[in-house]
Image (cartoon, rainbow over all chains, first blue to last red):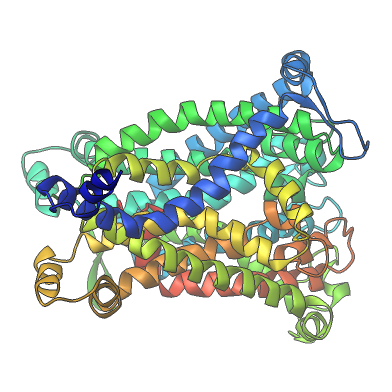
Length: 310
Length: 278
């Protein structure tokens, strides 16, 4: 007994133990943030998976009971989820595609010889900075309202007057408002890419007889491609989560025409208080997002070479 | 291809593209401009058909909003945004430092882990967090929003601060360590002053995201801790009523982020791209 205690008590510091101590010292500053994030994201996610295996409605006391994969089988047969996934995909793809194209066009404009570039950029980014709930309300009530809005009035001479955009074309309206918001984001990122371009290369191409379209396709586009990809990736990760503007513009309707995954989750969890079902939706949403994000983020890692310095 | 405008020789193409550019900018900026115009009208002017274009501006609706029940919402937004931003800085700075200056094994994986939590859908953790907040009596408590916004912004904080730290020559840190500076001294006396611009950029992005956040605010607060976007929900079914008041409230709610973003445009790009675009 004594011998064992002695041998444990006085130990010469070996190279290995010093390295281990040093390793822990290096990791220590990392720990608070790491632990915080684990506590508030990973443990709740584990609980979400756990709850998804239970039938549990907060409005019905004592309804907590194990139900296996019932919540998932219900999701597979439930039309609401399919509609929500479909709407999420339509919304995300159309918003990103349109805002990348517009963003590229506007960034090219701002990168060419025009008057008042700085002020143009400043005004252009305003839609992205405006609080999304505020922006959606302004669009819905003061611009698109068929009776009091400005746009129906302006469009009347063109045969488009008094159209109830929010109710008749709900998805078009949501996409339009989101494009208005995300085009400035794409424009900013693509503009940064364009500005990193060496103007002498374009000049040389011009001297060699390349026209504007050729030098854009052969020189500019390959250069800004990583910036476009970065914008599209980050943008889609945000747009997939769109909730504010749907809540304010259409409240997911009419019917379920604009209900996307986050809005469906909101309805099931906070209008129906169906905890088990909401958790199952959560798990499905995570799986879908993970697939997209893993591919996307790995691409981003390779594009921008996020490497440790030493 | 050149014309004489205002005495100088200016290419026609420049004039042409400027006109096109300003037209596009006007279309995108118009809703913001319209919001401002509506906020300066009286209620009958704001909801008139045909729309009122020329009017004597009045600040009456701003006074109405500011003397009414709006200020508590605004203050809650400020507490949630500033509180969570400070917490992010305190936790993320040492982590970013460890990842940039003293890289551990698997730095890539740790970075990847942090950023993946930013894009984890809120569906992933919403229900357990809600139940936890309910059981701890943190529903409708601004502290719950501070904690959640800290979680949302932590990955941004770690990534961005790390990208700024990577730009500091490592010799500076080594010199400090040789001089026997403790870790705390090293962070406070050397790291913080050197990356002050980085801290400013990170704070800006954290403030923007938490100030505009709506999903958790609408589900975790009701009255006492409700933030500025929740105040706007009250106008959701306005049919021709209160447009001027709505516009004034929307203007005030958007003002802090709009001003911050306009002032710090360079930092905005870097922040939005997690430090990838400088």
